[in-house]
Length: 140
Image (cartoon, rainbow, N blue to C red; front, side, top):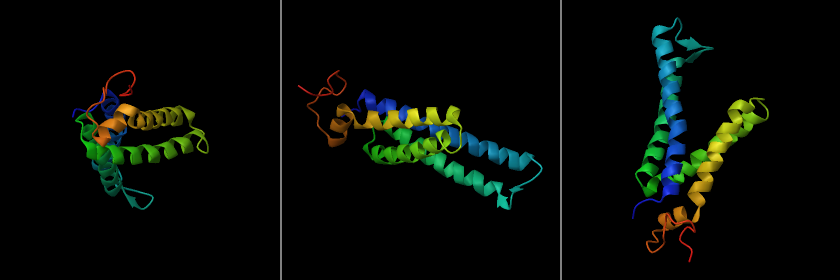
């Protein structure tokens, strides 16, 4: 059964932080290779780049999985959204960076809402008889 529109949209939203993480990893790696120092406060920039590459790659894989309609990607995408919501909340409050926190919170709330809509739940449960892309979300 093909994934409903809500799942594919959530896939796009999940892929965005994954792309950002991969890009940040690349920037760190390039700064370590072409920059003057490979350590920052005693930490290896190469290790930090690898860390963000793993996190970004996993998040990007979940987003692509949702775009392709893979059921395995739903739960990890929800976990990533909840974790990023905490980061957005911290940016909004204690860090006093609402210009970063609000968009991140909006993105994560969007993912959670899209993946818990009725068509998304019906898709995840394998309920084929429902009109998954309809305005009522499979309710009759």
